[in-house]
Amino acid sequence: MPESLFYRRKDAAEILDCDPRTIDRGIEEGAIPAVRIGTNIRIPVQAFHEATNTQPRVAWKPTLPDTLTLTVPEAGKLLGLGRDAAHEAAERDEIPTLRIGKRIIVPTAKLLLLLGVVVEAKPPSTNINRVINETRNDHD
Image (cartoon, rainbow, N blue to C red; front, side, top):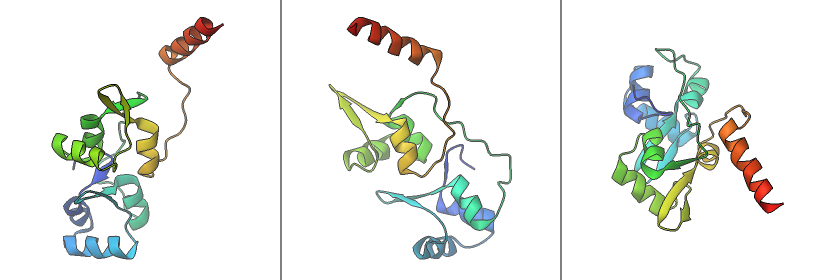
């Protein structure tokens, strides 16, 4: 299974021991949650197991990004997309992005919210607190 937050249709079919077309019907009927990114369909792991009342075959604990932003390829990797597919999805606004100069970044919180991934809020890291405090001091 991929080490991402999502299954592909064939992964979900393998888990349920069914044909991928059965997964397609479940998605169409709304019984299986899915996200369409261009021509790719991805199924959130957590929501899939909740909807199908199944358990992951191995202990699944996603490694969520601990940064406020991601590069487009990093966001694509979380979605199970290749580099080119991730950039194409970003160009179509299917992945939320911010442009700062020539750089395109993906806000982690917006990406996770868009995908319906619920994450417990953690206090910001000390590095972020330090930057915020320095910025406040510069403006005083």
